[in-house]
Every structure is written in structure tokens, then in C-alpha cells.
Length: 386
Ligand code: KIV
Ligand code: ZN
Image (cartoon, rainbow, N blue to C red; front, side, top):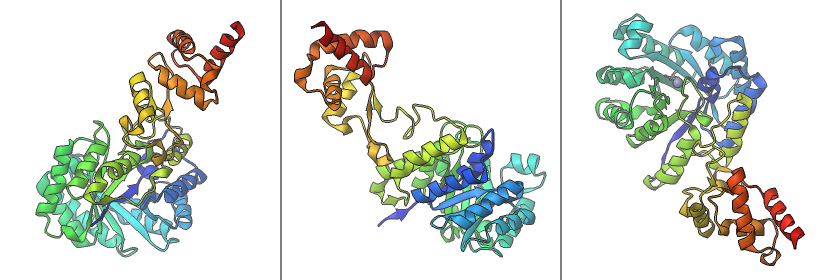
């Protein structure tokens, strides 16, 4: 039996709101197309009430994208919901995502209300949004810091009011995986109508735990994960969807968990988003960093040349990257030099491996990384001397 985990991408909403310069409508369309091609289930295209530009990009994305469902954000107020519905009405089907805070600190200090008032605003908003679509998602903002009795009460009321998806955000990236998984598990134990909705999670990365928390939630029963490509987003960002996808594919398929997205699109989509958003990817970033499939030490390079899975738990091809990379440094051994020379088209008889290797080591000690053209030069000068 398989169990589908729905992927909800909010690069264009939570991701975009953290950029120094906003994206143009065309850039957003390009990203939406790349996400659609990758097979993302739900694309949160923006927050239409926030600006005319955001409204227009959501409208154009809703008119263009066919294979992913488009979603737009709204606070739990009618004007926001009207704007979201108006922007997406060109699409056959769309999702309205409405939210309100549920933690004591947000309810008291930000909203200046009591919990019952907030509950009423949430349920009114969900019922209102249902006039426009039967696909309504409700988020309990700052759920990670919400007292569990209140969270159970809000989730139950949201489902009764008509939310088909209830999202549990760890808005400030506060929880740990055991805690966050425990919150979701408690919801499944205590909310009587929970089987009438999909439970979603939306984790931020303030403590670097957003992906771990999302996976803990999936283990506890959540079946939608929200995140962004490259993990871009407010402050330290959101859960990186490419990491979530590869964890589900490489480690969780054995429990019957599946995702619809095509991982072979990951590299391309990640590069496109990094470029358009002007957000460089740190080189040691999991899955999409420049070093994620690079091997530097001689022992690792030798292992990978003998059998790729000695030091690779997934292949570069699986994320759409042509091949792995063996960095030539003073930690590299003879095996990788011989291999690289063969890749460059040299037969064994054209060079003396030991001599070349010693020269390579001397150069690598001075220069750090040695490139193919350096090997060519070492060989050329070696031949000149003869
Ligand atoms: O982090 C958060 O709580 C949000 C909500 C609007 C879902 O982005
Ligand atoms: Zn968020």
C-alpha cells in the first residue's frame, strides 16, 4: 500500500517575501512553470491583497499553470479572501489558504484578542472562503508555540468549518523533531474529525531543524509538506523542498510513502531559482550545493571509483546533475589521476603515472585544487624535457 505525501511549494510567497528585490511577473511565471514541470502538487503563487503586482502575478500564474494546483494566501478577513478568489478565478480549480495566529504570544500581543475571538475569525474565514472553492487550507500560525489544548480545539473547529487541509506551521522554527512529531501525533490522537482533513506542516529553519521537523511530522501522520526550493524564506528560511523530496525518495519509500515530484528536475529548478532570486546556494548545501556530489579525499575518491555507493547515498543523475565531481587536491591518490587522464583521452602508455603523480602533488601543495588543464601542462612540460 502506498501513501502519497503532497508537496506544497511556497517559494513564490514565503520565499519571495524574503528577497531584497521582488521578482517580476515574468520571473514568477518562469518559476511557476519550472515547479509545474517538476510535478509539485500545489504552488502557492502569492498573497494577492498585499500589492497590485502580487495580485497580477497570481492572476497570470493561475491562468497559465494547469498541472499543479494554484493557491493564494489570505489573512482570515473577507477582503483578503475576495482578492485571492478574484486573482485565481481564471483557473478551473484553486486553493484559498487562510491563516490566523493561535499561540498565546501572537493572540495577545499581535492580534490583541482572546482565543475564542480568534477561533471565530478563523471559522468565519474558512466558511467564507468555501463560497469560492471547495479547496480551503487553514493555517494555525505559530502552531509550534500554541498550547496543545488550544491547537486541538482550533484544528477541530477548522475542519468542522470546511477546511480540507489544516496546516501546522512552526512559524519561528522553535520546536525540535521529537516535540514537533509529538504535536502532530497528539492531534491524530485527540482531534475527533481529523480523518476529514489532510494535516500539513510548514516549518521554518531558525534552529536549522525545518526539514527534520517536517520529516518527524510525516512519520507522525502529516501528509502535506510545505517548503521552498533551496530553503529560501523568512529569516533563516523554510524547509528545503529538494531535501524533503530526496529524504522521502531515498529513505521513506520503504514505508510506502511516495511523492509525485520528479527528482531529476531538482538541479535545474534549484539553479533557476537561485539565479532569478539572486540567492547563491552555499556550496555544502545538501542535495543542490556545488559540493553535494564532490569527493575530495583520496580514500573517498578511490572508493567512489570502485563503487559509487561507497560514498554516495543517491546518484547525481537522480537529481538531474550530469555526474559527480572528483576534486584533484593534495589529498587525491594515484587512482583518481589515472582515471582523470583516461577521461581526458590519454592512454596509460602516454605518461608515467608515478612521475606525473609526484609532479601533481607538488603543484597541489602550492595551488590547492588542480584542474584538467594543469594536468595537461604537467604532461606537456614532462614531455618537453625528454
Ligand atoms: O510561517 C507561517 O506560519 C506562514 C503561514 C502564513 C502559513 O508562513
Ligand atoms: Zn512561513
